[in-house]
Image (cartoon, rainbow, N blue to C red; front, top):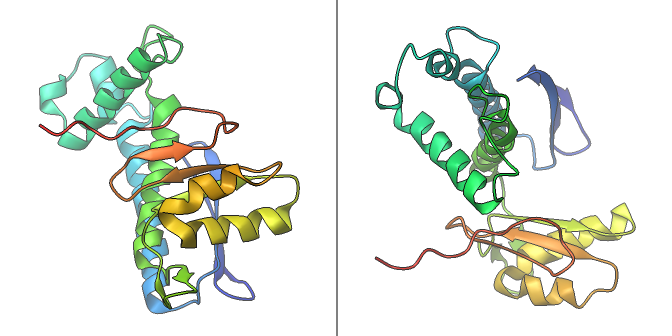
Length: 203
């Protein structure tokens, strides 16, 4: 863990890869605690979902030592997400592609999203400059563009704008965006690759 000009930076070897945390919020005990929790979460995911650990729930499922009903609600949720990805992708995503259960194509992104949520909830949120209050219309936003400086600035502005961010980003020449709402729905501009998560119909 190292200091940056504002915040902290941490590199963690986990899940067969390297994950770098670059936190720009002021370094305070709450941020340090959230980083520790996020790192612990990633190791938890590795222990439960690794196909290389014979004792992991996924390995035991793959070898029919246990069934889905014997697993935690969290594991059942991940398996449901995998089945949804199979259906939506028309089978081009598959957690059974090799003939064995392997959800890693979904789990790594899901794990990082969980770590990001932990840090987001602990951090000093981006402030709406017109109201002087934390912006809370979006859970996260990603912006792509031709240069890092303006892309980063536009991402901050988009987060602060909240609901109006999509149309604003769409009006910028050469920039695309993806936004995640607090309720799990998402949107993207026309040129941003990938799928979005629509709102669920009310029961």
